[in-house]
Length: 426
Image (tube, rainbow, N blue to C red; front, side, top):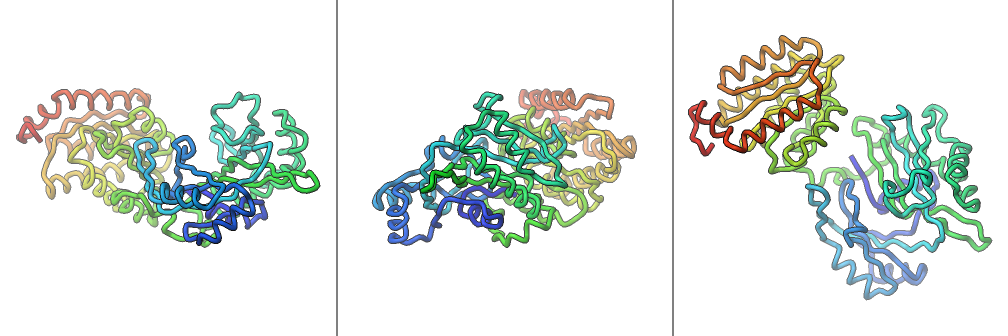
């Protein structure tokens, strides 16, 4: 669950009294837009995308105007614009009108859960307004802090001093930035990013940090985000029928996180564990149909429903059914593999057979029993398979699946179809 933009970001920042740029929504009247221009001289027009969508500025999807005529022309250009990011296409539905904030200094600030430090981590630079990865490391502070005590002012002050931030911005940032941990901690966020924070000078010359763009991610299973009373439609858009079907199962035990990477891919990879998911998604690239994490010891019935949905949407085009995960501590491999196998048998019975190669890499409780149950299903359906246990490097198993997919594309699919008594064009 991701949220971008100042339309709702400014509302969330009000919970902790963090200054934000003035903003009007898509329903703003012409006189309201004109009045905003009169007050601030410059405004920015940004399309509204649901979910987390980045790189809008680099794609020319941010307009600016100093008069009403230009603002309305930019509104017309951007209101229903499409944005291609990676393999996904996002559709805008409306625009915001945001006040320009004059400033000499821009700051990048983010809070996230770091797998490196195993703690909430503050990332900050006084060279905001650009991609953080493009900066030299000496200009970026990345500091873990204790979640129980929160983000303290001295942590911010020390970090700014370490990266050589201008003295005039340190005191205002030390005063305001610690508030953002309250927003993250009290409302179930996993990440929060403000880029840029513009340091607006006041009449007395003192600078005030003003948030001019907002991104955050929520832990959907943490009920605290519901305190914000955000409309449900913010998180329901641009999700495929497949994703929505799987997401309906989130109320059950176990995880069911999915995202369609490439609807034309040829490797269907039900994955168990976040670490495995990251590796699998990266190595498989565009061959992967979905990114998924079905760990958390799902019971038989839930796993079978998840598998049924996956097969219904993707199995016909799949070359490799790639069941992959690390060595589990608590997930019962027998229950999950039995569910995957039973769903496969039922899918073939209901929708017809298709040529398929099954590759498995897994470890955990009841592994041998689980592999035996899945092997019995593959044998009964005439499907070739290759199973790897916990003693096999997961990277090598992923590469093996890629090689099988390449072989399937080069004629292997036809060979398996012939062995199954199916037409060679299946």
